[in-house]
Amino acid sequence: MAPSSDYRWLQVAGAVTLLLAVLVVVLAVQRHAEDRRKRDDIGARAAEIMNRIEAEAARIEREAAKE
View 1 (cartoon, one colour):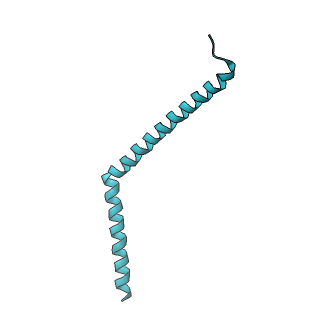
View 2: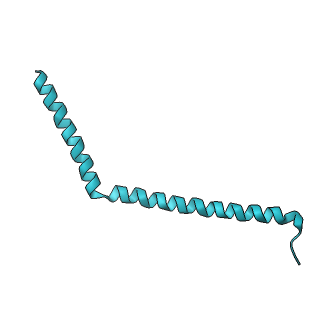
């Protein structure tokens, strides 16, 4: 027996909700993987630290030149 047409909209809404939930999970997993890749990227972290060190050294040199 076919489902009542009165409940057809409920089935459609349930399917759409399920698809949206799957999409959210997929996007969350992708973002987590990207964040983890960025966090674990040693080369990028080293470059970031070197940039900070160089900026601090430049600031100290500018201060020393003022005196």
